[in-house]
Length: 134
Image (cartoon, rainbow, N blue to C red; front, side):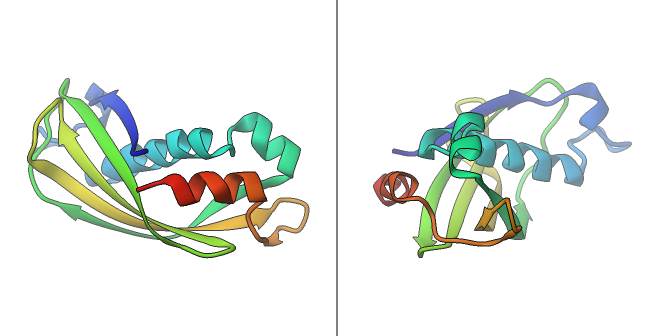
């Protein structure tokens, strides 16, 4: 299972050079993590049930090509590694159904008990879904 999310570049996301402002690449990648969370059982109901969430601890973004207002974006998210409390993702952003990446990101996420907050092992059902990610 590859997590895929889609969005369109909004006018307010575009800078004075006419392309997607760097901060909005991070926003698009962040929304793709939200979509992944839904798929692994940490959607709103899962976060409430498990009293936990994912916190981003590190993000590295590579900007490869310009993106313009109105272009449709697709982000594919894959698991790089994981352990009992951490999940490292590799994300690739494309314009529409293109094959050439416009940006990539690596994110390190930490599973957190929200009552603490403190790092905590993933609930078993969530961990099972993480293991199913390519």
